[in-house]
Image (tube, rainbow, N blue to C red; front, side, top):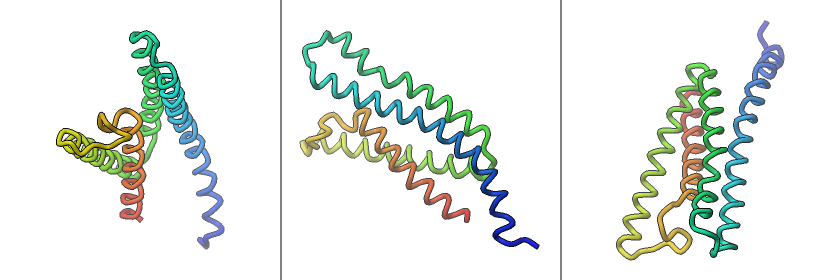
Length: 147
């Protein structure tokens, strides 16, 4: 007899390793974001630093970002077909949404309608936030479609 209670423990057990894997991946996203915020603060507080050092510091968040992408790819390869499809649809939505927002901001800035916080377009932090926002919306849409 299949009741909700008899299925639930199995589902709970199988989701724990997935949750732990997801957390291991997302730790690198947190490290990347924290590194970006620290470097952004340091660059704003010390505008007189050597330009070569400033460029190196600006690129520093790329290193944990690459580790994050590598871990994300490894997690993606371990997903079943439905999870992969949901993630691909979410990432496609995030890519399209971020390109649309970035292009719109650049067109508006080029025509004198500027954004005070983003005078040069999305920049790295804005791009990360935009991708994350659109990815969350994409996952919600795709998950709702397949339930």
